[in-house]
Image 1 (cartoon, helix red, strand yellow):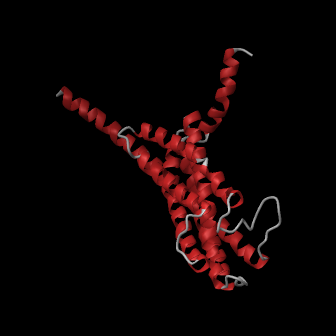
Image 2 (cartoon, one colour):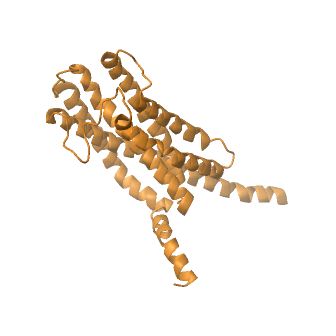
Image 3 (cartoon, rainbow, N blue to C red):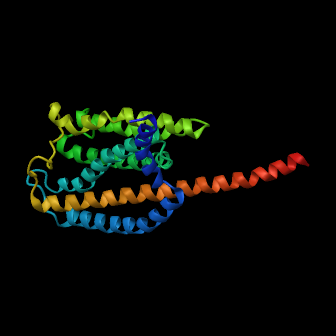
Length: 263
């Protein structure tokens, strides 16, 4: 295999990724998808929360306090999966210089931070009647708090430089380093003796939750996911349009500045 063939094979995935990153194509596709995502996210989330908060059975030990689960657990799932999406965008940016990856990463950060804050707040509300304290330095709680700070650090870092590209690179490196916290969040209840209960839903075993509580929880999680995707997509669309408008304004200003200098 000669050098040109090798280079072409290496550049192939990058070319395919960039083919889907054309700003005009992205705006057209996202404009068609966004209304469906937003409407379905609102409807599915509303259905899951109404079912869980009003009609699902109470827990035999925790009573109606368990209903906060339908807000807390989907937020926790999205906090971790949102950061995974942030890390994937950062990888696309660093390795393939994907033109939309930086913008998507910037917009995922605030949304993920909000979902993580919801997770922490509802967890405290749930923990008070169950544990007798608003906060304990439990391994799961502490690792999620670290995740929240990672989101905030990324938000601050990408905006800390005059050159946006330097901010994107620094934020991408932080996002990839912070991925190590995700397995800690996931397996903390298995690795250490914690107050937080183990996962009720696993890929390798049957759910330990009553089916009348499981279905509204899954529906809420699907709704949260659709809403998360819709919000990030809308923010990324706005960022792309803002960048295009800025480029047009700079292009218009350049001839005017040249004409003034010549005069």
